[in-house]
Image (cartoon, rainbow, N blue to C red; front, top):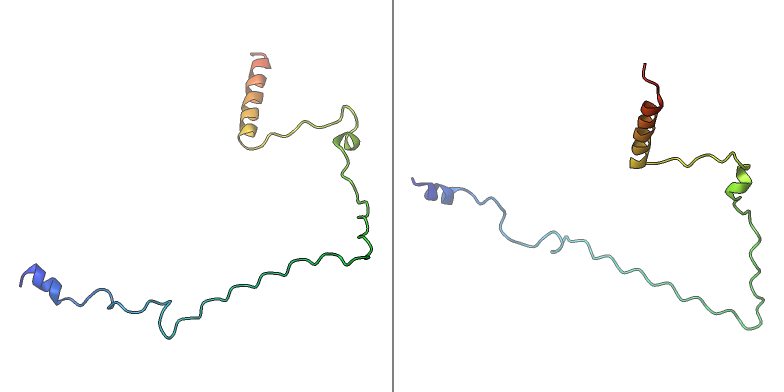
Length: 99
């Protein structure tokens, strides 16, 4: 028996074509679209105007948090941190006297 005849004798690898999972009598119904919200109605004539919002806490400025001369240096992040560490090590190596 030749190789081509042996291949023809094998059962098919895939089932015969038919309705997909999204079709047929057992398929789930399609989801219904969500209704749109109704547009906001304009205020009725003669209605009082909405009250002004109450004043809230404001964020203090850095000058209010840190007294003059005591503000910390910004911290480098990410790749800048490793570069800053390398620069600091190089500066320390240059400034350290040779023994």
